[in-house]
Image 1 (cartoon, rainbow over the protein chains, first blue to last red):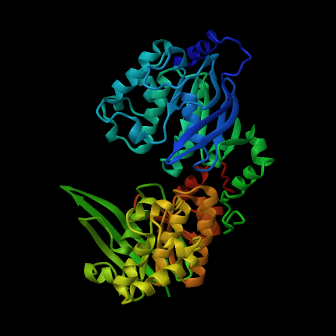
Image 2 (tube, chains in turn yellow, purple):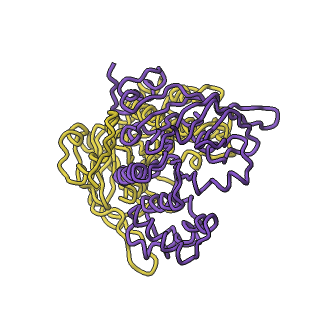
Length: 278
Length: 263
């Protein structure tokens, strides 16, 4: 794969300060209007840093604000407070505007590959669109398909002829084609078969790191996050309650909520013990 | 004596000229008071096995073999006769609680509908029974809950209501198809505890369909592993998980993140 040599060079070429984090969130908040007045703070005072070539796992229960945070990072939601900075550039709400060139380094893989691919265009055309954003990335449609373990003749087909796992791999290939510096995966494996989940997650990690990118991997499945993340951020009700290296979260969780989450994972030991105390 | 005994069950679906064999010679038993877990990747036929017991096989499906339910043969049973068993003696809980309920009817109406259809009880008595059953499955404030609509509940609570609906007619067999897949881990633990409790207290024969070995390891008594419509391994929980005999079972357990199989 030719891209591996080139992509890291591109990532470091015009970074403003080498030591600065690639992506920085500074006390970011996001609010939604509720029916009948009030406001709901989905994300509240979140500060996070993402380094270069780092995989950050973001875990929490449904409704805790994980996806809203992902949307804030991509400029799909307007922060009510605080700032998001990517590679020295502020990330602002996109609205109906075209994404600024310097922010194209943020690419997203969504949860539902059935909805994120265009059903009426061939896979080749969809990958070509992404390649056009990053013509110097060294990828071709064929090398992208090869990287995600799909046969070369997939390029001629439409998305409906692929299974869920294959579609998600196409979505990953498309995100990679644009030469991301940060790959944001919002529950990218949640809609897949359990036995595929670990494989696709590892594939995302390897592809992101090999191409010199960082990754934010959002999931409610702690065991998968444990497998691929360098650091883990635990989110509860709009706040980050704990951020630590993966081993530390796993072996020595500090926050009671982290402990509760970990205790609820069923162990595959055949002992017939139902986890948790509730 | 098994509650349900499935022997050489074959299921094929013909679409146009193409015939697909979904189940091939599937045999296993469900016992009263025990949870039988069926594991397998998607497309392995685990859900279709459950649906065959319920008599809900897809249109154009051809069933052969035998499903013996307490002395009654379910394969080839006329639809009308099957209707009298379904929801009464054979009941089912589905994966997605949000789509299992009608959004515009109250929970009370929905979980008593089959009770009132099959047993001649008044609306008032049915609602009283619904309140009792909702309390049994630990839905908070059952008296108010029967008057509410599905969107007013969280996923975990709706799944508890689905279990209430499934047991309201005192069934003998409960088929739970991925009952916790759509839920968070913390909620999942509560639902698994409920399933175990219902199985033990009501002496239900439970068929638990899931792809999650963590779930099977927590509650299943017997594990059946399926691949492409074939049963590749059947055994006691601990034996199957700690010392899988079949290569495929081993690969499934090894593919789990963080899982280690003792050699």
